[in-house]
Length: 184
Image 1: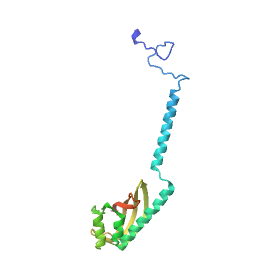
Image 2 (image 1 turned 135 degrees about the horizontal axis):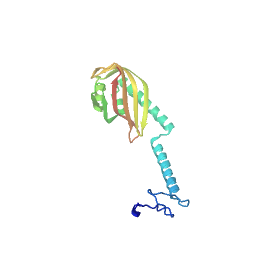
Image 3 (image 1 turned 180 degrees about the vertical axis):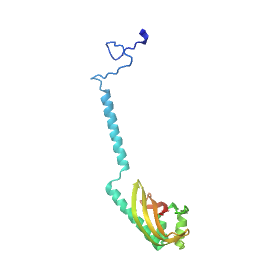
Image 4 (image 1 turned 30 degrees about the vertical axis):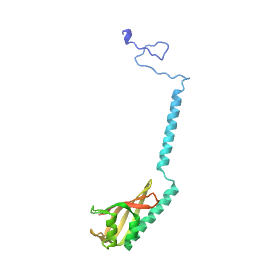
């Protein structure tokens, strides 16, 4: 080997020839433990911040779950009574409903159908309700057994539906979205 091809490990004072550099940590070099300590601390802080942002205290979740359950029951009762004013209060101005046939319905259309008697719900039973929270949003999925009619015609049957509730800046829950699919 020519001398220029020889590599000397610069970290070794003995001048041993080496093809690959050898890294050696000295006992008095504290930079690696300090770096590891800092990285570990940062990971711990990041984990704590992430979990605190995503997790709602159990008691608060429980209380909000009951509030959403009450609102879902109030929604059912208002539909059965054809109470257009109550439905109007529960639904956000930018509400969009999607019927099982894929037709979009705005808040004004929903309230008008209910007020004019076009929508007539004779019975409505909910089961298998699940409520999930994402900040100020509640996602409700449920089964609904319905007897009635709308502008789409007879809607008697079993459905899976989704309500999206959002808490507004006044602290009121409003439905922003509804979608139903017939269970075959």
